[in-house]
Image 1: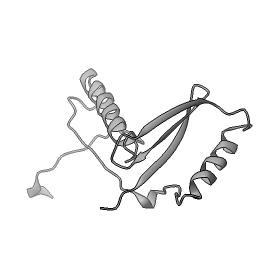
Image 2 (image 1 turned 180 degrees about the horizontal axis):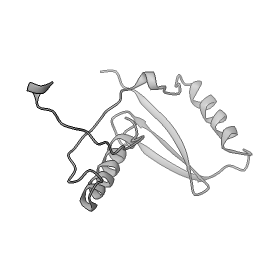
Image 3 (image 1 turned 135 degrees about the vertical axis):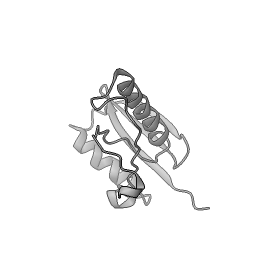
Amino acid sequence: MVSCSTQEYWIEEDQVVEHIGEVGTVGTTTRMDFPASFSDEDEFKVDFHNRYSDQGYKQASEDDGYMLIIQYPMKSLTGSKRDLWLKDKASEALTSELGWKGLGIVDVMIWAKRQIQSPSTL
């Protein structure tokens, strides 16, 4: 089996959070104050990419992944209080499961009004 590692970072409350690990596992996270040696996040991002590109890493593109669409029935067309709660819980669960394991992110959640047709009318 071929293993694949992931390295990512994000800025949270004036700190840099770096998440490193094998894809499909939780990995490790470190947190540090934003380094004063960088004037802004763009400068830090260039350094981050250079640091890991020397080790064979590359920035993932949309061509490297897949889109997963999850649909579930709602109680009403506008979304009931329960529907909104379920949407939030599903987003939190997917963000945690996918994100912390280097598998992806929840980019957008869309409410869509769809008419369901039976197979005989398609």
